[in-house]
Image 1 (cartoon, rainbow, N blue to C red):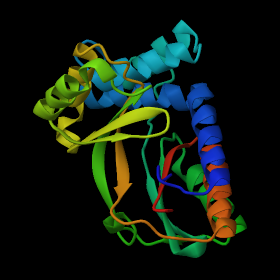
Image 2: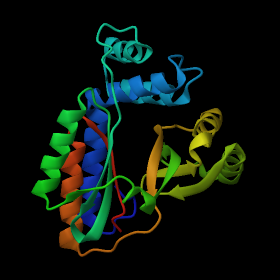
Image 3: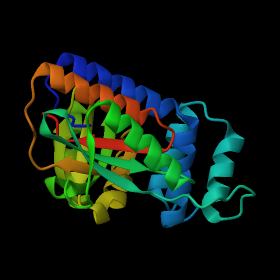
Length: 241
């Protein structure tokens, strides 16, 4: 969801969502599988895979589960079912917009689950393209704890040289955004600089934010939490202010 939510309760929901996402072995395994399919199964040559594997290890995901996810991505695993990545667009309370990304081996199940939760919160599916134009597709590298203060200028210049377009400090991290094609280069540069890269992913960044009252803002946050709890949902993005 939006990183700029002003209501404290909305921010609390955001923290809970992030914690659940990182703890879900199913989601982590699918991220590994998709990363392998995009750039191959060698983590030395695939920065998204390397970051996904590191995050999985930090979440105490068993080694054999990580290996199965890699094998599934290369098509050599015994359970190499086809994983697809449908994206749903929706309008939520207060006129806010949602982009819901899934990784699933059963798109009918995913669609039904997403529709059911949207209906519970008076949100509606939107036609393809009616929401995405409100966002920009970016590569985002997340560095927990922020950039080192004693060499921040040096680090920022190196990241910009690698393709970073924006470097933004949040409450507990620094997020470096770039054009999608530059994501791998920026993540590689961050790791070479000795930074702790928590994630390197493609994200939808809202071009403008929608103001709501606290009641509707919390309702949207609860909706996002319910969606993110689904194993088939990988990310939910919103333009909630």
